[in-house]
Structures are given as C-alpha cells and as structure tokens.
Length: 236
Image (tube, rainbow, N blue to C red; front, side):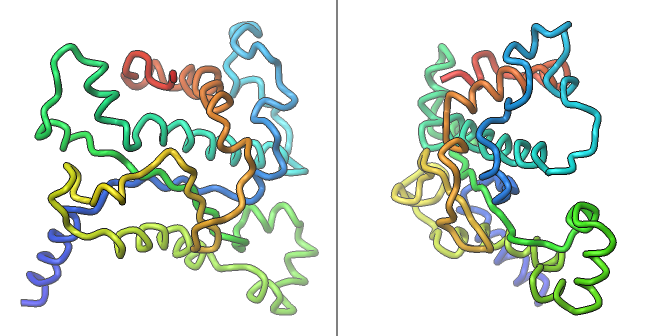
C-alpha cells in the first residue's frame, strides 16, 4: 500500500545518504572579527570563570554579541569538518592500537558539515531589536511580508541544504558510507545563503587556529563535565 511504498523509499534513500550536520549561521558573523573581542585574553585564568560567565549581563543592543555567537558557530563547523570529514577513518585508526576494519568504520562514516544562513526572517529577536514603532510600521504597510521571510520559509531555506545533497547522491559500492568517492566531504567550507550554496563568509569563520581556541577556551570547559570527550579531540 501507499504507506509501505513510502517506507521503502525512505529506507532506500537513507541507506546511502551521507550523515550531515547543519549549523545555522548568519550574515551577522561578518560584523565580528573575533569571538573573543572585548573579553579577557586569558579567559580561564580570570578568577576561575568560564568564557560564558565573562559575558556582560546587559542587553545586546548593537547585536555585537549575536554577531560573535554566529562567528563562533561557523568556527565550530570548521573544527567539525577537520574532525569528522573525509579523513575521519585515518583519525580513528591512528587513535586506537587495534586497526579498525571497513565494517567497523561504517559506524563512523565521514560527516558533511554545512553552515546555512536562512536570510532575513521575521522573528521575535528581530522585532525586539528594531522596536515596537518600526515593527508596527512594517506590519501595517505590508513591508514585513515583502522584506522578510516568515519562520517556516526560513526553516525551509535551512532544510534545502539537505535536499541539495540528497538529490545528488546515488547508491554506490565504491565507498563505505554509500556515497561515491567524489562526493566525500572535504575540509572546504560549505555555506548556504537563502537556500543556495556559495554564500560569502568571512575568512575568520574558516580560521582553524581560532576554531581550536574556541573549542579549548569556550566549548570544552562547558561540556567536559557533562559528556565524555575523546582524548585529544579538537586538537590538530
């Protein structure tokens, strides 16, 4: 019946579609030159505080902290590409005394890492930033619907990155994860803007040294007591 056909289609496609992670970026990252601008150089040495605890508890009126957070997300994507990309099998083999077989490596396929900016979306964050007067004017004149996406359209622009790659991947026996060798993810940045690949991203978002610092000084101190982090993860 129709439900069985649908299930079969999903099962067939999922058997070869490469795992991917999509981090929601923003053009706002272009306004930040560093995640650490305005903060102490030695974060962990400041009275034992974490980076998060050093962020001022004041309104982000100019969205500078928002811009830094989006740069941080894209730098984390850079780190993930180097940790989970096409060289992942080598990392797994080199990190264990016992060689990992091809069948075992299927459990750890390379992962495609994507940054995606949905475009301008009419969200509560945006409305709160521009204020009630501007919000009312944009809504009454209909300009809000003309200039901005609604939230569901913004979400579709993000999901389109999945559609873009799954529509191009075909089953293949030439690689352990199903995709052809030519389709293996590289360390190159993949940045979707408004549902299309090839968006302009700041060079800082691809800076591996800055990405490693982000991991060491910001992310790791927040998660190391919550999850088991593999030894040496995040170091190049």
